Length: 284
Length: 196
View 1 (cartoon, rainbow over the protein chains, first blue to last red):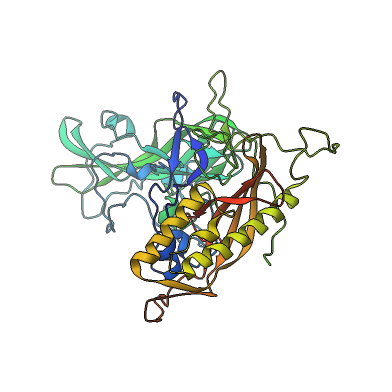
View 2 (spheres, each protein chain N blue to C red):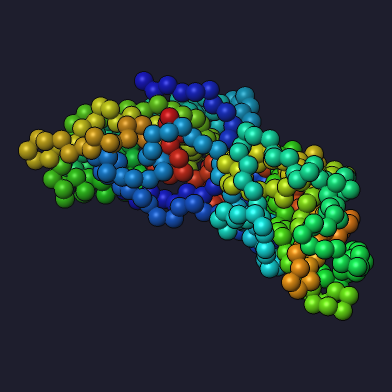
């Protein structure tokens, strides 16, 4: 039996500049013929005894973790290659950020300027102004789905920022400055602001279904085009050659690239074929 | 007899649309729904008289056609694939071609079937009246394979113990007479098994 290819009758254009939409096809080849179904030798998704699941909308969500970032260094043990995104159990609340730091409470985010008792304090005091020439990398401002969202359904925003060490000259001496992200703020152009002590994590990492609410997600109430600005609060430390890390009082904030989000309504229909090719087909 | 769930419309006027600000509009729409058929009372002389007055009537006729189709295909495979006669009047187009291929596979493998499939309707997908094809009724079904066995020339069953017994399909029945629809397509629904 020749089983015709099926398509979900949904077409997703990936860019506002796209002039021809892209059709998502899930299957192009017949997996089995009728005799294989009769005898039970066919293996395909349609021949698994299970209830129908939801429509799989996983698209090109890049997530913030996919974006490039600067050099990394962390005192904490690393697990896996996604060290910038901390996995959170689906049902557990997000762990409290370090010292309850948040963008609206940056005073707590500030590093402790107390010197290490074993490291004699230098005669100078380094301030944020002194390290102005040390520039941390822009944080990645990712989201899933990638660049679009569905009205009244959560879109998941994930920042990509990690501990970063930048080398340079400080007060005339070779020095390193270590930037540690301690707070994240997403400012949505619909007026909403989401703040977190964590960068967020992808749905898959969190073990959640797509379009689930997360600590860093946001739902847009109306269709349209929105812009999301990410601001990451960084704590800074410095060290000269041979000395230990010393905190710098205060915090600084660095912005990621604005993320554009197209929000629309979504509906699905089951069709026999591609509705663009066969607009009069059943269901189209 | 097949049971059917209450039919619901599977068509929606907009599948996925995004309205961007300003002059830029992004439309994510793969399907623009056909106008909902609106059965209207008509006289017998009305040339545009619909074949079916409602989706429910159309689905009932399609179910009868599919029942005849399953009986016929069981006769074909019950003969070991050598007798294609039962397909006449019940299968056309792709569905007919597929059954001929299936029959050839039975012949090639030296198999024959005992018993037959039954089915339950999962949901009506669409009902349209086409000037060239007549009524076209697409509906989802779950074939029940519990009553079907496949045996070799020695009479030994070749059915896998892991065979899936409820198989999802999209079936299309069409025809110009209400009591004479034929099955024109029967496609395995590959995305997932909705026959839970």
